[in-house]
Structures are given as C-alpha cells and as structure tokens.
Image (cartoon, rainbow, N blue to C red; front, side, top):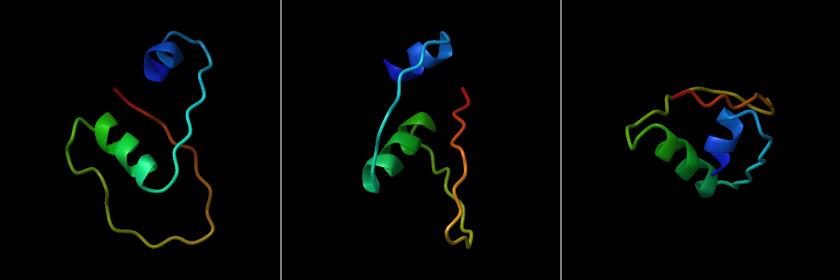
Length: 51
C-alpha cells in the first residue's frame, strides 16, 4: 500500500526498526541480496526506493 501510494504522489509514511527495516529493503529488492559491506558511524542518509 505504502509504495503504491507514494508512487502516486500521496504521502504514506512507513516505520521499521532493525530487522524489520532489513526485511523491507530485502522485499523491495525482490528477495535478492542487496547489502554491501561498508563502514559508517553516526551517519543519517535518506532511503530511496527504486523500481
């Protein structure tokens, strides 16, 4: 629902914490491995979903 509404230009916030956030990104990546190793600390970045 959230992705469809956001794609249509309607604001629909989502919330996930820890493993829930990992699950959301995994599902958005069509169940393929999408994570990469990196080192970062105390850095806030936007999450951009691509279809």
